Length: 392
Image 1 (cartoon, rainbow, N blue to C red):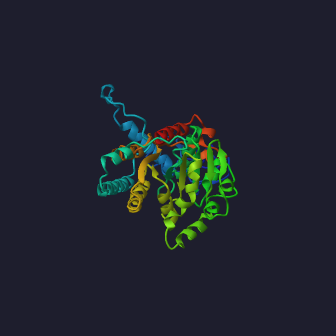
Image 2 (image 1 turned 180 degrees about the vertical axis):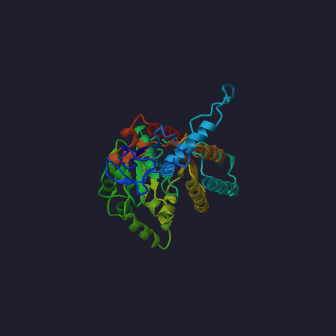
Image 3 (image 1 turned 135 degrees about the vertical axis):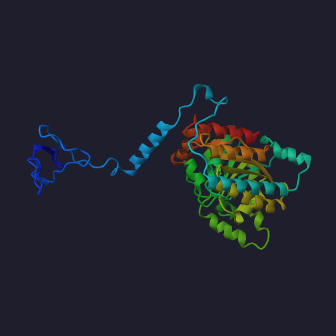
C-alpha cells in the first residue's frame, strides 16, 4: 500500500500490513506509524490504499479565525432583505457604534439632575429672560461704552475643549475687527502654547503689581492680546485666600482698568473649583460652558450648575448665556441624542455645536489657531459660526 509521511509529505510503498515498529521515511528518514483510518474499509488486494495523516479541522485555529467563520456563517444564514422592505425615511449617517448601556444610564441621570437644577432656579422677569435667550451684540469701541464685554469659558470638568474654544473664539472675534483680550486663568498655561507665543509676564504679575499692562499684555495676533497664565497662578491663589475680605473681587479690581482698551475679554478657566474660579465669576458678566457630548461631561455640567447658582446669589447680573456642545459626531447615535436633549433643555442658550475634527487637536502643536492651520476644515467653520452667534 501507499503511505504518506506526516513530516515531509513524501509518498512510498510499504508492505501490507505495515510493520508494528513503524515505517522509516525515504525522504526525511524519520519513523512514523502507518495505520489505516477507522472509517476507511480495507481495500481489495488489487487496489492501492493511501494513508493520510491530517489534523482535525478547526482544532488549532486561532480564536479570531473561528470568530470570523462563525460570523460568516451567521451572515450567510440570515435572510436577505426584500427590495420592497426599504424604510420610508432616510436613516441618516451610518452608525459606528451603539451607545453603551451603562454610559447611557449615566447620561440620563446627569440630564435628570440638570432638569432638577433648572426647576429649582427661580424664574426671571420677562425682560431678563429675553436678554438671556438673545445674547446682546458686542459693543462698538466708542468712548461712551468703555466697559469691555467679559465672557468666561468654564466648566469644572476637564477635557471638554475649554482652551480650544477660548482660543479660537477669541481669534474669530479678533478677525471680525474686535479688540480682544484673551485671559488664561489656568495653571497649565496652554493658551500661549496654542497661539505659539512665549510671554515674559502674565496674569499673575499684572495682578500682583510686578508688571504693568504694557509688560503683561502679549500681542498674539492682529486685534488679539494675551494675558498668560501658568504655574505662577498658584501663588495668586494663595494671595486671594490670605485676604481677610474682598478676596473674591481680586481679579475684577485688578483687570477693571483694561476695559477701556478692549471690546471683549475672553477668560479661559481651569477645570475644578477653587478661589480663582470664584474670582472669574465675580469678574465676567457672561458664562460660556463647553459641554462634551458624553455622560461624564454632563455630570460635570450638573455639578457646575450648583456652584454657579451659589455664586449668582451674590451676583444676580451674572448670566449663563451660552452652552456649546463639543465633540459632536453624527455617525454615532449617543452624542447626537445628547445634543438634542441639551437643545430641548436650553432652547435659548444652546450654541451651534462643535463637531469632532482632528484638525482641532493638531493646530495647537503648530502654534496656530484653527483658522490658520486648517481654514476650510469643519472645526474652522464651526468656530466661525460660534463667534457669529456669541458676537451677535
